[in-house]
Length: 575
Figure 1 (tube, rainbow, N blue to C red):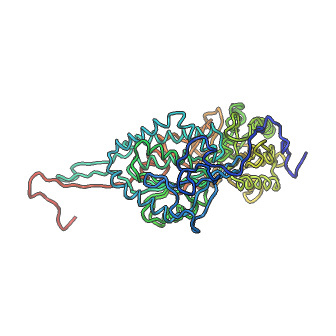
Figure 2 (cartoon, rainbow, N blue to C red):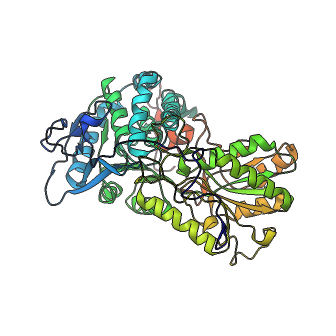
Figure 3 (cartoon, rainbow, N blue to C red):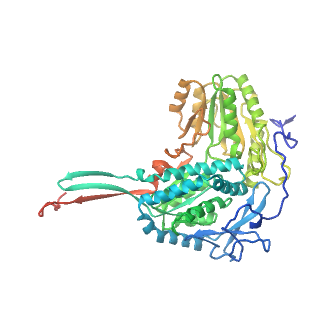
């Protein structure tokens, strides 16, 4: 059966082995009584914890000066209500109020007041608190509770949510050793009695603007290292899934973090506008889309702030079909392309097969077969591999790009549109989708006219941020490298091969900042830094690792002249 240029291998009547058939009773709203865990940040409009007495949707509080509190002008006309929605059912779970002015001012004032004492706290004491925090996060039940809120609000599977917390935990562990990377330099006897010492000192109040796709990991990229280096912090979590950040902050305060050192405010773009222009904020960390990140970097920089911003990506994986371990490579690519529903900046979204065209068909068929084994459904259900997209708009956009790619000549090997999950019929589900750009069994080469199909196809040019894998076949490794390098993004890439020569050539000629050799998602552990480049970053200082310490500190250099005897030379009118 053909639909335009797309061979439909499954649609609404997809087999049960591909789409998990799940059951749940839908409800129009949720309240604290429906939640598995206590949530002191969820409040009723009266200001107390929501008790479901009037079946109202709870309000997500801010955390300012160590206390959860409603927005200061809650209920006023100037306060904009934003719903937080379960993406599996589109049930409204809670809502935030984007009334940035008063709350942001209070959060920054609290952080400014806490800064002198916190920055003067011995570094080993700050590290010890973060070590205690890491120890707490090692408790499985603690991670499970954080993962619960991630799955509920963001939709990813519980297994993926647990990984979200674990990867953030690793950065907390590294932050607990930040003192080593804060060491300065010194040199004595630059002249008689003259010594120079440089110190790394904290900046002051720093801020973070976090994305929806990693509600725990990305905030943990930000505030632990800022706190370890002596700064105080204002975090704006994603307005789509804020609870993980609030629970993390609660745990840290329960361990003894002083009030005002870490503050959390809710909001959307008006709050972001307030952060990037606030004179009391010295540095901003951001992860998210290119449009938002470029704006935050440009406006923040114009207002004298340091800005580190990780943006979008279109990560390419190259497969040397003649020598790659086929079965292992297929499994790795499927996991990296469709895990987290494709909603991660290091997802593999483009696969370049190098070699024979006929063999590439066999590879694609095996990829489709493997992708069809993945179960789509609610993230709380055991055995589900692919959860929903974050919103209706995200689903609509992804489906539109799939259709545009088909209209422009792409072949849809596996079409995930129209998937129905029983009990969650209103959820934002898109099943794994595989698109081939090779038309009429012809190679794509680097010499292909860049203004013509297929490299202008939206399946290739757009960051879809969904479980969609775009495949192209090229004759040589040189073509694969050139095509990958021509892409404007530079977050990451990978090669699958058993040839050391091919791997080395790829490693040295590729431009992307993070390279995997038989590693599908090459995110560095926090001993290193996250080193995306090109269009995937703004600013020149990377997240976490030694580079992260440098971002949150500045050098202060002290030159001293101590003469043992009076009458020494302390300088004159000439240099």
